[in-house]
Length: 436
Image 1 (spheres, helix red, strand yellow):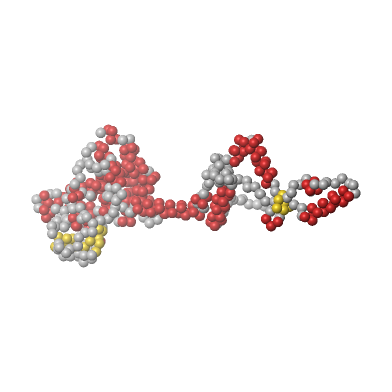
Image 2: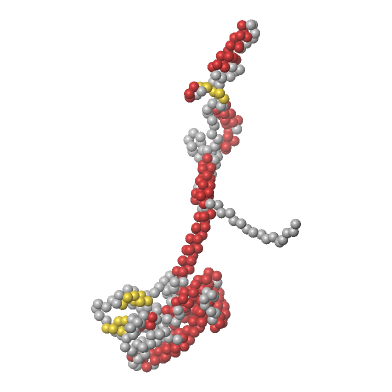
């Protein structure tokens, strides 16, 4: 007989849940019964002789005596020394071992009281039912989950974990703008909603990356030169319109007494009956410039931005504290790329906390700064835009390689940026604030 190479296999036996439920109930019952202790039987163990048998014994003794033979004369002797039987319910007569059992227990207590007391301490008191001093607390086996319950609990925990990741990657809470009974997301590009362009609104297509960068720089230059002397040349005004703005920017640039119309892309005169925003009005350009500068080395590296604590980036509302969120809200990143970037951030937070901490330390103040409306902020925003976009596309490829192509510029940025962020995280953990 010839044989071939064999392999090993693993089989798993799954016990039906109804069998596990029955086993739990049986264990509970056995746990209680084990604490009862020995229960003696007080009924008849041996049947007594019948009256006919007793009469036969008596006749035999009388006959022997008539012929001069020695014969027992008392009833107990005739019955072989047996005491009179006990009569139980229904006329049943018999003998019980209970009296001998009770007598033996009493004798054990007299001869070995400590041993008897210790034995009794493991069971309930047969008279009062009180628990013995050495009785263990009863275990409720119904509280121990079955295999099926364990699998369901794990499944629920996994779903909760997935939900937590989804919530963490949901990003900043949007601010919505109500106009003419319609709701608009202020983070989206304004051209998303322009369906009936107003006069002078001719280009409603998304701007290219290079075009957007040039527009950012040119708007900043015009606003901070000619705009100093002529307000109509400031960013968002008639002579310096915002290129590829989001809805929030258009609302912020609205002239006094005017409301922004998302469907036309223009402004209309405000009226008392005009609908108001269901959320606080998005910040205007001036309101975006409220933060001051850094107060020192600690403030620069604590990850909280200028003049703020490093804990601010942990705000549960997901404010724009990192670069991907900032550029997404500025309209430079599509939502699908941004959501995958958020998931990558969650993965880093769990698997490389030093790197994530270091990234937040330098990216948080930078993200806040590029969203301001100063000349330098818009210039830095334009310079950083291709870097952030390439980096974001590479992170999206890391999370879903089957859908997104690799970005080789992003790989280079990641190759340099991640070790740098990790180094910042290590410096932060060594309390660099002590250097101040």
